[in-house]
Amino acid sequence: MKELFTDSVYFGVLISLAAYGIGVLMKKKFKLAIFNPVLVAIVFIIGFLLIFDMDYASYSNGAKYISYLLTPATICLAVPLYEQFELLKKNMTAVMLGIVSGVLTSLTCILAFAIFFSLDHTEYVTFLPKSVTTAIGMGISEELGGSVAISVGVIIITGVFGNMFAEFICKVFRITEPIAKGIGIGSASHVIGTSKALEMGEVEGAMSSLSIVVAGLITVAGAAVFANFL
Image (cartoon, rainbow, N blue to C red; front, side):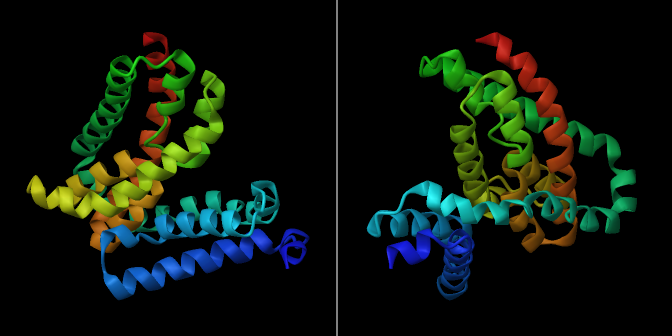
């Protein structure tokens, strides 16, 4: 049985899709934020590999084919942005200032976190790209000398938590403006958070999609500067 899975190039794809499908079903049934499909899939896959004593390399060999879809899937987020382009033009200054504020807040919080916990330089730069999409974050981490594998994990965790708590945080702080919601979610929790923004509304999804791109570009420059602070 084990050899059947590990020898198949489709093993990783099959397990990933099945795990995510289980997560979607659980989210629909229980309607609780904790049953985020991505989080459920991560837990399910880790449990599956441990129970059947399978190494990660065997899983990754097949799962890598799904990652090829990451870039085109991210690009598709430009569609809701295009549909709200007129609204974007009317609020361009506020939108850009909001995204820049989000990026600076993220980088500053990581700097404070690193100082408080006495992290070394490698650990510090590993966390800097936590709020940008994986494709950009991996490049930032590698360029600055961080641990790419840990950066990916931190980015995913950030996105999952953003997806889970975005709506709750907006209610707590009484954020009702759709543009503000989208910018906050997109600049803080990238693509995974944006999937929640799309559920909240078209404007939220469009602004969050824009934030992913702009925040990613600003973080590339900002992380290079902040990397010199520790």
